[in-house]
Image (tube, rainbow, N blue to C red):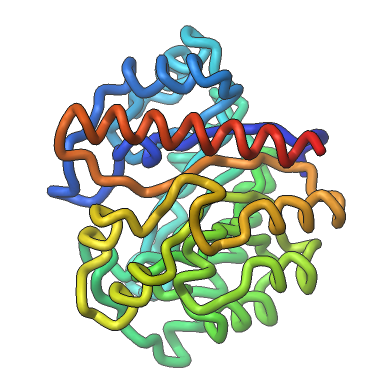
Length: 291
């Protein structure tokens, strides 16, 4: 566990994402510069291709702008016994060692592009997923990195029952994403209170429940929900972000608080809005963590 609470950001708050045809993808120099201008101390790596693939070069890019590397979101298929995820995970961990990043945020993706469809796993697939989570955890521990699982809309670990299966069967910790847990039908505040020892990383989002309900019902796609403002500036939605931060502080959470709000950019005006929303988020986190 990291020794003191710290504030970080993720490139997806600037619209940078692994999903094809999502929207305008801002260049790394702009995104990293704007993070620094907000007073952010650290960043997650972002999707493949955002920062250099070569580990030493990736570390140098962040060091040059004065940002600490947190680690990052690593989507991978974990439930297919014919596709071993460990070689790719171990290659990614080389960059973590080079940049002294501490948290590998795994997402159990379906194997399809985007987050619009989700299969139901059979028992054998669940066995494979749990085994791979534990293998990833051990591989990360060997190099001094914490592997954590991110329940995420449109992945195979999304709903409360799926989260519970991982809690019960694996010793991996969780990335508490206030947005995705809420949208998936869970209660992030209750999770903190029941499983404080399993919270090893935090992504902070706020949510419009009205738009989230339309996404969950299939009325609109996940991307369209994001485009319409499903993720609100921190403090302006229904996810009880301040209460969750207070609960994390009560239980002694000492890791990263990451501003990580999916957004779709289609114009320079959208980019300006994303920066303004990020500023609101950083200010709220700084205020609540410092209470």
